[in-house]
Image (cartoon, rainbow, N blue to C red; front, side, top):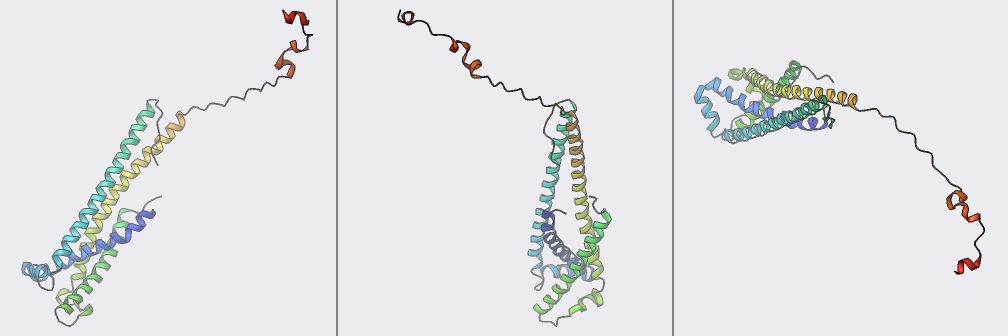
Length: 233
């Protein structure tokens, strides 16, 4: 995993956990109280924060989707450029090569992310219910929010976490597949360019001519000068 991905992992998981908690909380109230329970959960005095938080999470989801789409397009442009360079190389034109582990399986990624999100969502759900009880002036139930009629709440959050993990893992799998195709075309292009590159043996440097003073200035320097009267005419 690259450094950039490591830096983005924790914020991405945190946003997904908040998003899943919001959805699971709403589904739990819908399961228990029907439409009236969902309406009270969204617009009730204790839950008045749910709609603004939901709008914020939707905005974050849109931003994440746009980032995924930009990455998909960037990989597509790189793949198109690599294929064009490969086609030029096959026609005999030499151009610049396209820039250049075994990843865990889709099921492993999905399962690990789903379990992580489910644990975070249940924890946030317990904290959320206790804060709401304190704000309403009721005794804080602690882990009692997972008992009684809300006993299936962990299963609801597990289902939401599994769905979110499937969406994120599926999107990542598509990006990795396109990136792998780009790497394959780039490797083929580098091999082809290395094959087409002419191997020319460098010519031996020419021997340097070092003339003697006699050869440089001429043999006339050793002759007797003409008479003075000839020079005077």
